[in-house]
Image 1 (cartoon, rainbow, N blue to C red):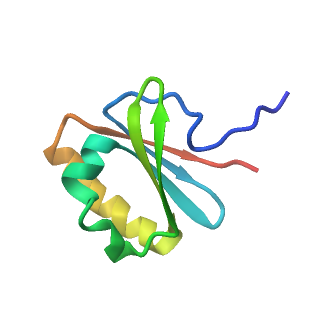
Image 2: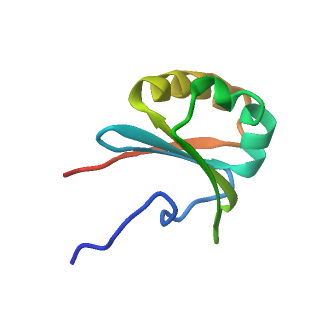
Length: 98
């Protein structure tokens, strides 16, 4: 049986940054603390398709950002550097399978 899935249904830890790649775009699900500290004033440079707030039972307050694939590559590269510097966070990447 297939269960409907979306970016908000993944069980997350408070320190987890989820990157979910779909066919034409990429979703980034950030802990609010990380977003506020590193991205809040910079995210508009990447011209996001959508930004929304969410709450995850395990992961707490979250910010979900939808980017096209080109902009997502830029954010991924930036994240790689910043997550290495701030070891309180880690990245999980998943990809949609058709």
